[in-house]
Length: 356
Image 1 (tube, rainbow, N blue to C red):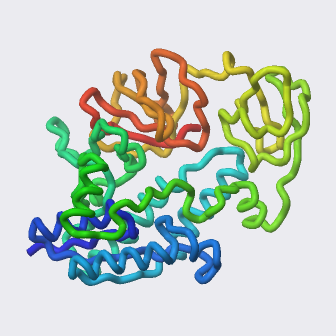
Image 2 (tube, helix red, strand yellow):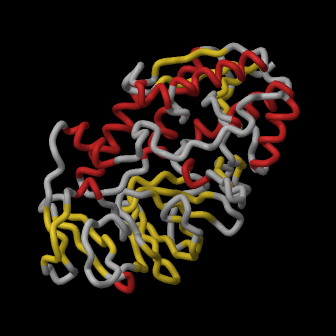
């Protein structure tokens, strides 16, 4: 009997993933990753995201219902170094980070996989809506998009071949309604209609600027808004308050819609532009993880530049550092620090990396 460690978040997706594995005959062990940094703090205890205390109680209840062992393991240090430190450093440098993607690679996969191997498990499993398949030409494992609204392939582009070989996605491309139905009707779980977590788990109030000020133990330094010609338009509160593409919440009116186009962390200047000047044809991507195959020459494919972005036709080419991507039509808010993920015509991930 194959043994699987299931990442139990306390939500409906991981609960149904564990149920389906047990139904398929696997020996299952539930592990909830303790990653919150202020154990006992009211704001963490009260929230129901993927790392709050209520999540642990829900995960424990699910494992008890399914008659499987459940453990809460301490992953705080690696979460701080690989996710929180990265998040804060990127924002301070004027880039917009992707903490959930970093968490997937280094915490939810590698750290959990290391622990699973210690326990003698063959696989780890999560409640992600995604699928793994072997590329017919290269033989490499790759993530393939499910093609529906809950598809999470974008957030999984940087998993390694070893991680993919030891990963199971039991709910795969199942509709969310079906997953909730299984939770309610098949196993009678109280988490069946628990809402999905939306905010960044270590910023419960979604106030990035407050978090950054507390993290660096200093106020964010104000600076100037300028136009593309360098003319001063007004003052901003500090670069940590803003991200590329932002229009609302700039704190002042300009007589016309203006968007954050560029953040210069060195001099503390934020460049604003009208939307017409805010679209780009080309971008450079580094820290590339090649999934289905490496890029030897020009490849026509589809690129996503954020989680909610509809993949757009583009051409990718190898560059001195990473790859360049040229879109057929200009794309809005190409944002340094965010992830770009490239798919072939079948929905398989070719590669992905960080926009620079």
